[in-house]
Length: 262
Image (cartoon, rainbow, N blue to C red; front, top):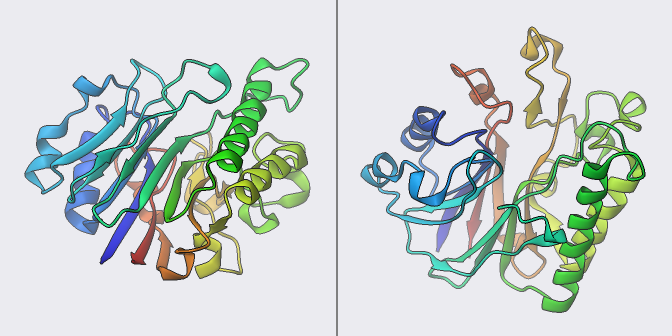
């Protein structure tokens, strides 16, 4: 079985329904994982998605904030959702594909502006969320699994536009990177995107604050696709759909793709 998966922080699925439909029509991934849907599950506009063949959805919704969803052409088995760090946020959902592969879709807290949990509660919540993820994966020892989402951390030096300038900026601080790699080690996860694209600057997010995001190109790779080591070698074709960042009224994130032959 071969399938293509995409992950995208859509920054409101209702506001940007037309962008989701454009992606589904033009790129036609078999599975699309969305983050920051900002919608209760019953308000997600599924009719248009179903008309394009995406008849299956597993979601974890929240009015106005957070929210994650998995859309699929293939049947999905709901595998639940976890409330990491006990925040009461809709940040995780999991689903099983017909081939038995489980997809975990995460929206990790952004962490605010100050990388110090003593003065910034949001940064502490982010670290606690990552710690709970690592604990969960150590206990569960996942196999035949894929993890995707906006993890809100750009771990490598070439995942940001300027490593030296970014080391004290939330999303690229050493403590966050260490926490993310702890999650990766705990679940025996491998970074599919960087296995396919091992060298060079690579971004999936560009700030709305930039007047010309494309020319300035001050990006970060915050969106990830991982797989457990038992299936990671089956992944190929990784790419970031950078042009989507320039669509009309875009999300500040671009979709990330990978194909799996499992």
